[in-house]
Image 1 (cartoon, rainbow, N blue to C red):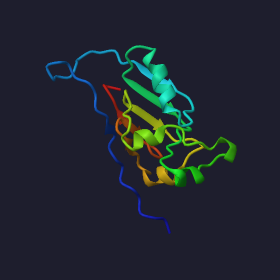
Image 2: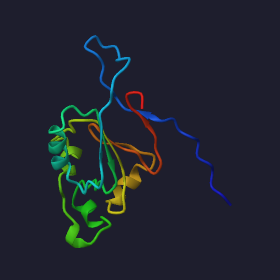
Image 3: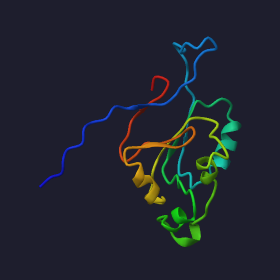
Image 4: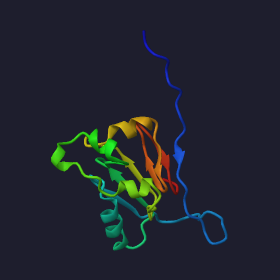
Length: 142
């Protein structure tokens, strides 16, 4: 027989900036940057974003490679010659914090053991949110 149906869940709301007085801004243009495959190179991506001026949200569209440790690296779904720790582990360990709110989806080259722990999505590091198998977030009116 079929398993129990899962209850629908509400969209997550990511923190957004407020005016100096603490009240949310009424009308504001959001600057959203969209990155293709990340391949775990967060330091490079955030450095490049700094050259674009103020960015409010970064969306990463796959192959994020949330590799926390060597065990994650060993189970990553890609040819061995492409396996590398890259820089996500620094954000996971709290050694670095993402300079802009970052939302990502998984791709076909992932350390799937970690992302499977977050099937419904969730925070993988300070300011970095995984959408899960199928997720929705709200950010600054979007």
